[in-house]
Image 1 (cartoon, one colour):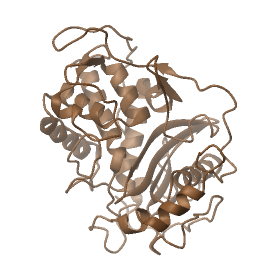
Image 2: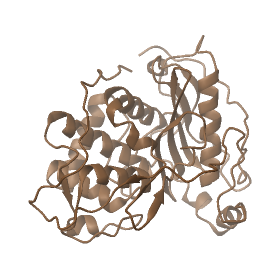
Image 3: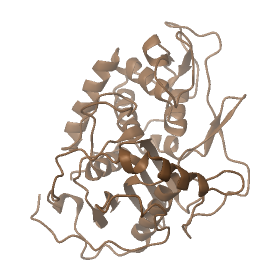
Length: 359
């Protein structure tokens, strides 16, 4: 790793935080990096430990993709809901123990709706038990160079010892995009339908930001509103990380600003991700913004910052409305399937993955 580099100036952009008065003065982590060159266009507190919330599901997806690559599973493999998985709190699909779905459907539900019960069921399918899967997640994280991350469950629900950094999330997102391009659609779907109910993607950039193609959102009180985003335009692919935003709209606005910056700026003179040495005071302590995010004043401001149909207002000039029906993919239970029985589903065309990047 290279020596220390001067921090990039933080650019003021559209979509300024409407909760500035109630949030702490300390800057929250953010980062935008080119997937191919690894050039960093903007960074802030990228080594500060943070609660990942449902961004954890990116690690769950990556560990599952590794199982698919090894031939241990296919996208047709049944994922059976256990009592343990079904007992997870919302957001969830509320399936009962013994009900089954294909791994293909499970991945859609986990990544689009952020279903906590499905994430645990996937982990149990991959590794036999939730603890075994968590151990595998951490082993994979270490292997790809996530040096300041640790996971305690597959879904990101609050738990002691669960943390990551903006830098590590960028490593994970880039590794997924480079190593498993065949699974990129899972992060870019506008939503899914079970035939009875439609579920739009919680990522407000999908279909609304030109070139947006992923990846995941997350929220718990301690982390604030988190988002890992990716976009491809004009042959350039970038990934942005926003941690601790004040609202759904705030994280979408800031993610759009960072993506636009990365897609339109020159990489000349910018440091590579691997050249940025750890920095920041107190970065070894996991930040907790619960008091700023989950208090009555902040909740009131968020509730007032909605449009006439109850949607979070977006301020970014780079985000536009979807003036058409959402493009939904199918996902649901296997009719009549139970543990031990096979399941039919989509078959993926799995090319040989490219080598993982060196950071």
